[in-house]
Image (cartoon, rainbow, N blue to C red; front, side, top):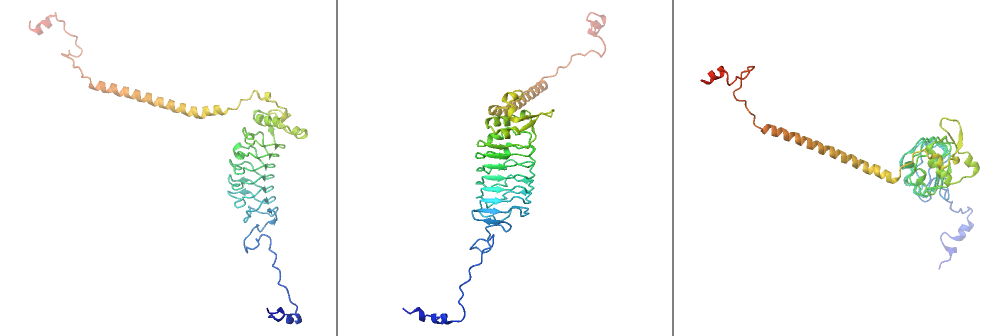
Length: 331
């Protein structure tokens, strides 16, 4: 085996060389937003900073829309303090592994019903401090794993059950600092795991519409300081009353909501009754029309009788015993 001392180039020549031997330069550090080993491909949006563990920090970057190039391994997306005023359908496509999404302080005014589609693993969603006035039905339907939802600091005057949908795992819901005067019936019924409901800063109106909310508050006692701040204004009077001070007997004058069985009767038997009455009216009309046509045919078939020896118009009939009658008969 040849000695490395006599290899080419000779080792002794390298040792005696006056020029220093340089080791190969290390590879340049990969800039933020570029995936190692794939030149030009992006694992992080250019305007954002990404950290190990899947955090994508786009806070305060004056973004007007959700950035492209979100990694499918992203877990935490911070988009607060930007200028995202609208969320179109599929705004977060490709980021299906997100667990937390922060959209606070964006001046957000409109959210499409399919904006959050594909985020089936999302657990925390913060839409606070925006300008939302209404939510389309089905906005949160795709978020079956959602556990915390904040809608605080918006302009919501009404929140329909169809907007939230059925969120079986939702534990905390913040509705603070909106314009809500009551919660729609059935809103809380679709949230079986809800334990924390933040309601302060809303103009609650004392009335029958508060009955579902008061019933929920009685079943979920709150700390005394927080419970005392939940007040409602009585219509026509400037008096404030704690929401927890209303027992169920206080709503005895209110109309009871219809039971599911009553709704079935209304929505099923009601149309059937209408169709039955319409069919009866049509049948009666057909019978009347048939009778009228039958009478007309019978009148057309009957022979007409002609009068015999009609007397002159205006002259009375002659007396059989009179001379005129005898002369006319040739007697």
